[in-house]
Image (tube, rainbow, N blue to C red):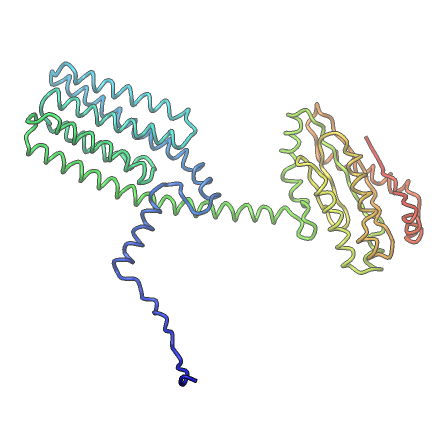
Length: 416
């Protein structure tokens, strides 16, 4: 051996806490990401909800901005006319007034959020170009034009956009003003140009900060409203669903049948109703336990829920009684197919020692030319169910077990 072995310790560098500068930078990036757009969220469903919510708010904001701009243009035209100023001033303000009217009308027909933002950007940028045009024609920047520059930025927070859209407006306007004034050397005094620069930067900074704050508040409101509506939908679902089977409950059909019947009437479809009653359900509970009875109810509900189309509903009325609301063709065949599947369900047959589950059915149907009435349909279906149960051959569970081995099925009661 060359010598004793020596152990080597490996130390991991401790995680150093972020510096204040790094922490400030991370918080700043997080804040900027939050206010960059008014509809950007980490959840896609929340972002889609925000876009729908912001559509109306953005439309109203751009309308308010354009309306205020229109009033300012009208006031400027009246002022210059009273002062006896003629020429390009009146034409320029008249064109801006027409642009404002065009925007007010156009936003009512635009259903895309990006297009609405573009309308607002165009209005502000063209207004800025018009101000520069007037300044170049007069060769001076008077108090009215300077106040117009300030106004241009002060109206920006009326529109609920984020820093991204506001930054586009500020950037385009600042570049246009700066290069336009500097393109003609000596036309404007240096003091005037510095004053304009100060007004642009101060007004833009104030507008951007206001927009950032409004975006934070607005997104918080959107998130809270989304969560509240989501919780409301969950409560509605819970209150109208049977917790054991997942079928709808009586409350659902009572609250929604009129709307369902109206949609069917508008689509010229007849509303159909079937009442289902499980044979000897008490015998299943008493013989094989209530757990087996619950399994039967769950299997029945699952078979129908998987088979029914989207315009139909399975309702648990209570106990072992169910109702099916349907519109379309082949209703009786569909119900029979579901009950045949339940009759031959291997899980139920195994748990009940080969005794099949049979169900009595009563059908009722309205007409496509009349609005369906739930009370009348239920009465007719209940009478049909009574006839079906009365006309069924009286068999014991043992006889039904033997019949199941011969793959026979129970009869269905029908009432047109």
